Image (tube, rainbow, N blue to C red; front, top):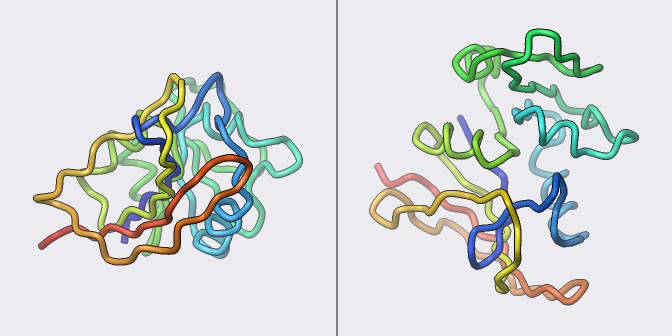
Length: 160
């Protein structure tokens, strides 16, 4: 099953200057609970944006996409193409960013775990829109406010 895990603002921003434009401990805990023990797939910039002490993400198989044949990601497996990486994923794979990787994998995803931040923020990486003809809300968590940001965690499932 291919699943996407993302946090995005009301204007679909997921990142700014190689990092997250917010700090949400509840979202990070949710992310860790979802992905621990599984394979995570990410682009090179996402891997590089993870603080060094957490890289590679512990207790997860880390797959990184990079077109640079010389790129090395210590503790992770590097793939030149999305097809190669998806072929290596196995049964469960969580795509964790960035914008280009989300855009490339959304059409094949079965589920999207989204932390939806209510405000609009400035940023340079975005998450694609979820077409309501293709996606339904399977679960909605409680509205939470942390560090000045109100958000709700929702799970979307592809409509058959």
